[in-house]
Image (cartoon, rainbow, N blue to C red; front, side):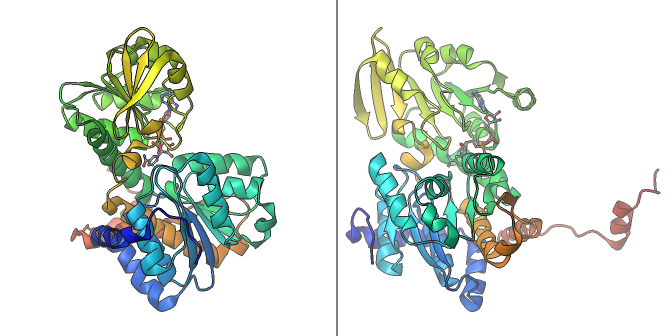
Length: 418
Ligand SMILES: NC(=O)c1ccc[n+]([C@@H]2O[C@H](COP(=O)([O-])OP(=O)(O)OC[C@H]3O[C@@H](n4cnc5c(N)ncnc54)[C@H](O)[C@@H]3O)[C@@H](O)[C@H]2O)c1
């Protein structure tokens, strides 16, 4: 079986971590039981381009148990857990192409290897797989019936492709499911980004100024957690409505040019380009710590930082200290890549349980319905979203009220007033 991973000898450690994550993934386990019996993905070749983590491994197990012939490649050069990759290859014979710290050429070579699998369905996180398929491997397009996409940035790219008439098969946007972005983007990114920053630096957050760029689902989560750690949180935004929300949630809001002078920590989560740029670096305090938790490593203008520096040195794992010509230092975490995956372990399993339940069910939906769908980006069907929330609550031992017949009638009528 073809694969390209760091070291097969790491497999046992990987297995233990995959099993640990599985405890916190009851929704996925419920789907797994059904998939084992019904085999809804029988004979379906899947190319998955996802962060290779212990949670993703559980998803890969479920796809395989559902009858899929799946391969996995990384969706980021720094997010792979090498022991998990080894376990998937060794214990499940799932081909994996991913090595933590791989260079860009290897990253794209691995995407190519996943595409060599001639997928019927793509499962993407950031749309690199789909993009390469449309640009360089068009001969494979005929065999693809559809795909799924995990993250905000990927959905934005795919919608742009669809608008241009360039998208050649339908996609289900897992990110748009409420059981995904309400929890994964907010609570998952919030907690794991703090975790990544702390593991990388071990610097106290209490009493420090912490600048969160972008108050979307991820930014909201991070701002909330940073406040919980005792930091003074400042939010920067470009959307007036969202900025207002941040303000009324109790955060200071200001342009980055102002925040740059105050911040001890900066973290970008916008999906945008050069949110931290040269003029911001020029204004920053000596010793400022900067990180990104948005999908791509373009949110911080690293080439500009390089140009302003006389030297850079690695002072701790995932911390590079840039010495600027004027004598100040700026500390860049995780090469500007998703810090929660680079320096920590990504989202906790409990939120990935819902994200990956959406992936598994969206894939099943795609296999059943692809012939009825156009080459567009579709949301996850609402009944899937609700069902996932129901199973999750059930697993957490939480019951909710049910509408009485009288209430159903009232909610459906317009005649009744005071
Ligand atoms: N780290 C992770 O594990 C993880 C998890 C989920 C999503 N993501 C990624 O994080 C990014 C944000 O995702 P989201 O779901 O929060 O998106 P979102 O669309 O909900 O939020 C992004 C916010 O950034 C704001 N913004 C855009 N450009 C800006 C700028 N120049 N300055 C300040 N604010 C700006 C937007 O107005 C918006 O409110 C995406 O790239 C997404 O793919 C990362």
